[in-house]
Length: 103
Image 1 (cartoon, helix red, strand yellow):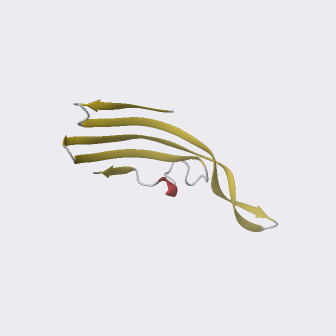
Image 2 (cartoon, helix red, strand yellow):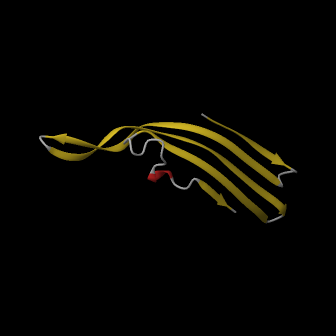
Image 3 (cartoon, rainbow, N blue to C red):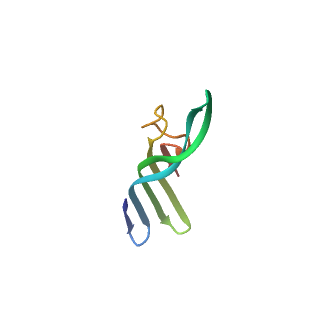
């Protein structure tokens, strides 16, 4: 699920975009240990899942001809759902930063 709004204000002098998303990804690879004939093996299986929820906000101002001021912020909360029991409901290494701003 994803939804958002986009605004263009003051005769194109200010544009604003905001969105919210909630995405579930299935078939994520995850590590697993199995034992066969008394020996432990570390393998990778592709049956994990992750949920990402977040927002993204961007603004571009054009107060003077040729001058653009850009700013953005995003918040991303990604969690392992089906994974090794030690990392369920924890943030995966591949998720990147939780908070990110630019300008």
